[in-house]
Amino acid sequence: MKKKKIVVFGGAGFLGRYLIKELLGRGYETVCYDLKKLENPGSNNFLSIVGSIFDKKKINEILKGVDYVYHLAALQDIDDCLKHPIEAIKTNVYGASTVLDCCTKNNVKRFIFSSSVYANGEKGGIYGAGKKAVEIILKEYSKNYGINYTILQYGTLYGPGSEINNSIHRYLDQAIKKRKIVYNGDGEELREYIHIKDASILSVKALDKKNINKTLILTGPNPTKIKDLFLMIDEILGGIKINYKKKTTPGRKMAHYKFSPYSYQKTIPEKIINNTYRDLGSGLIEVCEYISSLQNKKEIKKIRKHSFDDEKKNIGVDFDGVIHTCEKGYYDGTIYGKVIPGTKKALKKLSEKYDIILFTTKAREDRPLINGKTGEELVWEWLEKNKLSKYIKQVTSEKPRAVAYIDDKAIKFRGWYEVLKRIF
Image (tube, rainbow, N blue to C red; front, side, top):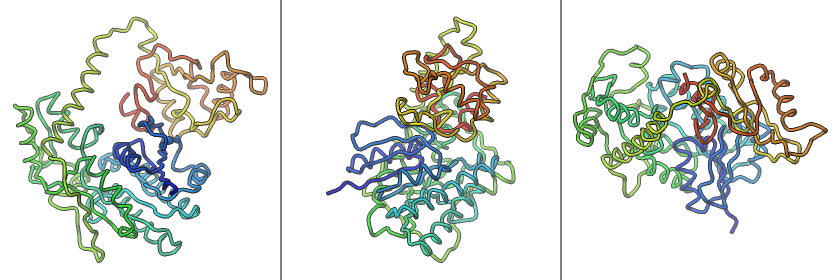
């Protein structure tokens, strides 16, 4: 029996990494499509492709023979979406619609959309409005073009591997490092936290045929008051001060719900459940251990002093998968993809403070000539063509001494927006 093939757009993110492991564990042939390459979790059924959700040509190529698509790619943070509404709308609405349209044209059996409980109500700001808009577009595509769908409305995800914009990660990070938590609200707010492993299991269960053209809610088993969550954190870590800030901006107050994200609607989503759930207390300890491991790595880096001046002024940037979308081999001559969105603006900002050193194995001296040109010459030619060369100090085949590296090993590349937030 032929294995079902699945593409996960945004597969290198928090939920995507866990979902891909779950899919591979169940025997699906799985492709990760993201702005950054995902390391193979140890399966012969896995492929990671670096690309943009706006690249229709590339998406159409990889969707040939695909059975199901999970679309997770999005700007996830509510407050970030409020600060950058146009970027949020472009990524969350237009990006999702672009992938959906390609799925329709390639006869994908089902489009599984990662939505949010915020899509059920009037809260959630630009983020919630974007999720709601895609749900409406998806249903219209189904009616008019016949593509099947399943909408997954997630509650508040948490677990090891989350980023600082994840609420529980942020609370625990503050508690561990500062011994206090600053919270915008009075603590009476209710949330239904769901562990990332439970969410990934339920996301795969959603592939069942009974869930075709349905909207499913994926939340934890029980609502938890924020102040009760903080009591649990205090019991785990001890001596944590909670600072409730009841005054907040009107935009943020309108975006976040207090007791429920839901409002009346004709079609009621169904809640999909597991037989067992991970305990919230145990999950909090897992995240504490994860944050502590990150802190230990940072402490090791702090001990080391810069031995050379160029370590203080250089930024090392990986050419492949950071500057251009390329996963093809060197020898076939097609070594360059398209410029990754946001690259020019990001390089301009970085170059104002640092010397940018581009590293790529394509610049190695032992590589054969292509059309009479060395790899380094071809890289500079491509940079010039795309009006990026003026921001680059040097192209090299080895990692330079630098204050930071933007690649899979140091600053993990999930898009220029996240990189610039971390550096500046």
